[in-house]
Image 1 (tube, rainbow, N blue to C red):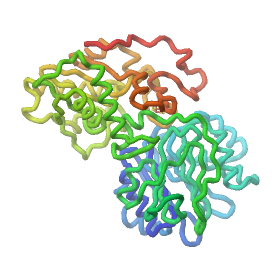
Image 2 (cartoon, helix red, strand yellow; image 1 turned 60 degrees about the vertical axis):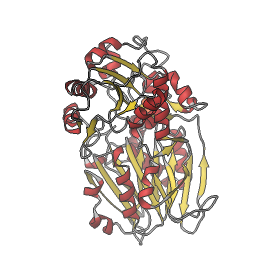
Image 3 (cartoon, helix red, strand yellow; image 1 turned 90 degrees about the vertical axis):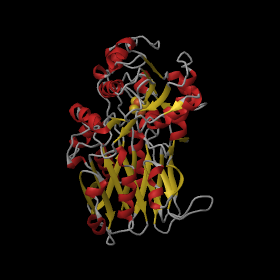
Image 4 (spheres, protein in one colour; image 1 turned 180 degrees about the horizontal axis):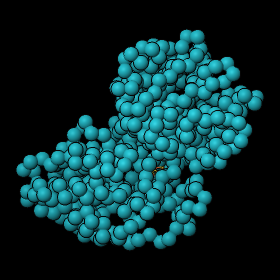
Length: 481
Ligand code: SF4
């Protein structure tokens, strides 16, 4: 998971990029960077390992002069943890460094396309998908396609997820893969009227939560398969649009995105509340009462728990306190760092738990190790019963479209029965959302979402990978109490 940002024709563009990236820092904390076009037309960049506040400080922002800039925050999904894989990537053409690219998402056919380019003599500086996209566009452009035709060709050749901003000469392009796996929204710094605004003052972000911090107003999403062109003195133009069946990542709504963002036509926090309400409606066997408290694993489960508590008419409580100076445990790259993160991150509220039956809501179970530690923490704090409710279906497959999930063998839902998982967690009962529940949570829109890590319905499965149609039967599916 990563985040992208773009600013076109606005004073202090690099500073605006840093602010947007800071607001979407939850999408990647390993490295970040920005690139801006100087008055002479040359693009200069700066990137490094670490957080936005550390890497893109005021001195760097001042050095990246220019009114148009792009940026990126990275969490490694493909490619090693090294600054060479930090983005944006600058692409040298015959005229010099006049192209730069940042992208969010992973490509299924990366190896095949890279091999083809290397046989053509293209030299790579990283093993990052965004560099491949940029070098492929540059190759077609050098061979005679105008830049928009080159982007459109690349869009149709690449399989997978890419929400991308690309600076080329005095233009900024924003484009998305034809299925729209990853979110990407467009805003304006001053435009208040109806219809398309002028290009000046346009901003892009992976999530709309990036706009408030720079005073921008959300205009709309960049559509799946769309190429937008921004050029000084010209109106904003959609120069190409070739969508396929949308496959928006449903996990963005469940977990990854900030609750104050809206994309895929949905408000993130409202979707999470609907998930909670749906779970509560199915949980009639768990009796309400004065001793029942519904509690999230903060923060990504807060609104799921709120929706559950409201629908059940039960008390909502914040019994676990989160230290906000610790990053997301899921997006730390090793199990050891994730384990340490759990201990540092959560603390039970004193005197909150004794005598309580706790409905502990989490957004997902991947390996189960973090949740096991939390259940133990809540039990030791005095809870008399712990009923774990998971706001997503069982994760049974990895993601190939930009989320770092483990191999199938590491996923707890593939290794244990539901009763075994309940016992492993130390919970009194355990249940998940079902994939069919998305019909009610996203009414009329279910087909527009990717749920492959829950049902193996991969639109682009890697060769030889077991999918919905050829996978072995899943293990038991009944809730366990
Ligand atoms: S496989 Fe899962 S995480 Fe990946 S895009 Fe699909 S829903 Fe999202």
